[in-house]
Image (cartoon, rainbow, N blue to C red; front, side):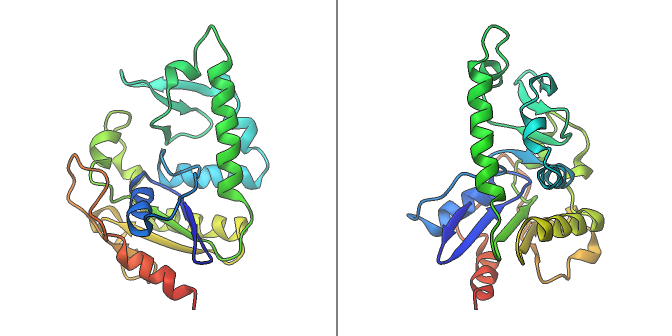
Amino acid sequence: MIAIDGQQIIPIGCSCISQFQIKKHFAPAPTQAGFFDWNIATPKASSDVMEAYLDGGLMARLMDRAAYSTLSPRKYLVNNHFPGLYFWHEPSTEILDPNSNVGFQQFCDKLRHLVAQTFQRRAQPQLIWSNIQPNLKIVTARVTDDWAGFCLSQPAYERLQNLAAQLYDAPNLHFAVNAEDCAPALLGRDNVHALGLPRCGKYVGPKGHYAPIFAAIAASKG
């Protein structure tokens, strides 16, 4: 996420590519840390996190140590309160060390900061949701065989829109999708951008790939 030119741009899933594109496009401007920037989350998981914040229960669920476990030999950290949310880059071995609570407390402190940054009430934030990261389908296969869960359906689109409208004042949502991973009826929407990249082992995307989204954000400023 980043605050720049009077705009707050906040990724809300599915993966890291939006933050990489923000960094590339706005360099050398400093970025901020957001909850979804470096995690992987299905649209349902993003919505569940947003809904939990609204009902006041998010931090209690995130700080429930008993809810955490790991998946795959790579030990990706998950929380059973939020299926489809993967703390992809967190040091799960240190966080779940049975002989020490230090790592878990540091993790909770980090989450408190990220939640506060991401869900601070703002006027007209620009929210970006994307499932176009080239390696997303490849890496998520390590933890789930439900690729359909990462696709943008009409209900998922509407739920994200509705929750964002409750969290923020007049937010603008932008969706970057692979056309084949998006409900066909959504592809004609002004805020749905078919920016699909070939599925491969890469993850950052070329510089300028989010240009249509950043142009729409600039235009919305008036």
